[in-house]
Length: 119
Image (tube, rainbow, N blue to C red; front, side):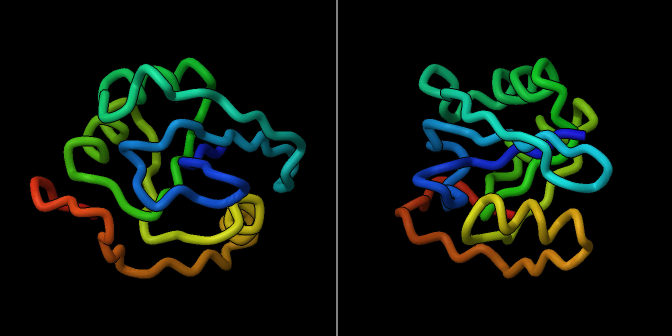
């Protein structure tokens, strides 16, 4: 299993659509076995492009702080499990998800996103 998250300096990036990097955790036997950071420099706000990138990388779960409904729909349309409302250290969030203890909160948009909504 692989888990992807928008990533910035070891933490979940609060705004999924403008994240320049994503971290992908590889999971084996219920534990994090490795991670890689991939660039998103050409796919910011590109819903279909990100969905294809994640499926190409073998991702099954996407965990984020928040994201707009079009992005969530694009990810779900290719079979990805989308979880929003997470924050903090990315590796700790992945571990909490794997142990069934991930706590999520409603997303409070703080980046001037008047033109779109978030989940």
